[in-house]
Length: 498
Image (cartoon, helix red, strand yellow):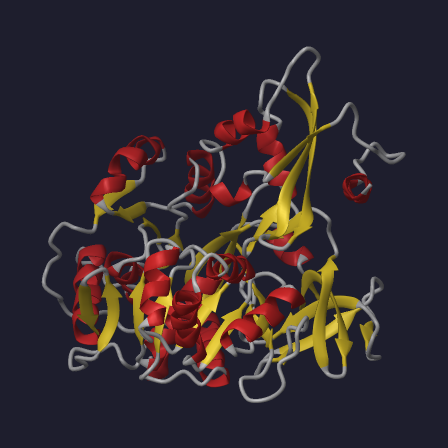
């Protein structure tokens, strides 16, 4: 391979700068690189190349996670990051759909995974076990080779596997590192989910590409994170609107001195980014008042990475996601597939560029349906106002953006309908200051049955990821339907308003 920029330039055995902080341990780029090379040798087992073998990993944010992701890429495999809070049926769907043959994890998760992997004939490897010394490495994968499958929810009842090539990931990373002025001196906390493009690409990969230092948090842990921020540990902060809301609410509980220490830590940063869901204007303004930071809001999704963003240098507008990023082509189209050229006219966002994914894994119908004349159809509706895009909503009421996740209402409904007491249900997203949209379930019970919200919540905990569990339950005798028998979800939202 002739393009050496495919690999991360700071990952080499001579770079002793700190790459990762994992708890109390600092890991240099040189140490991280050696860990990756050793795992590459272990994965290859005398093979020349993994030839796009799908290898999953079930690992929280840690040195082990980063080693697994980069070793699979370096060895020519397809990385399948899994959600460590997912329920077993969700894991089974991801593993089976992707045709995973090996799964990497850590010892604490073995009891949870053994039976599932045995049933699917998947080999489990623990990352704590000693790896062989690095052998001769294979050539870097060609740019067009598949590199990663991330599972996302669409308008169907089951998540689809979004396939990105090495060149896709490179385009996304290089665009963002340039657009947001990443530097080797940057420091950033990473607490976002690492089965999601926001945490993987925007933070982890951009940080490592730039030679920055990333502090890993297995989850969002408010108090220790804010303690570090009060000590001016970070120069960049990236989060979803829900996190900003929670921090604002927490700051309100502190005395003036404590609040000022934390706010001064944010104020000293060069960049605060909000994404994965629309940032309410109130949150945008409250954050500015508290910290002096003008949030940089952006727009993206699993299939395209980031496509639109407010400028790093230039005007950032509350309620707008900004302008197209370099190398990304953006246009609005009406329902008849005609491109909209006038401002203030709503249309579906469609995207072209090297940042766009290859395909939905082994789902040619879904892949074909998601493109029109070379444009990827996002399903999101926006309007162009004085050169800036503003998101208006989704073209499908069955997609809910909650806490930075894009959720399938149909998938949640399908699970709820397996409850013994539920006869019918409909799930919608209701506007919420904390979550962006709160998952709300309208339920018709079977005759003679009762159901309380707390009981439903406990039932859901073993059947779906925490962020998919309804935040509210409404019991109804019937659900409104149209002449075709389909539930009219806008009418459900009107019922709440009334």
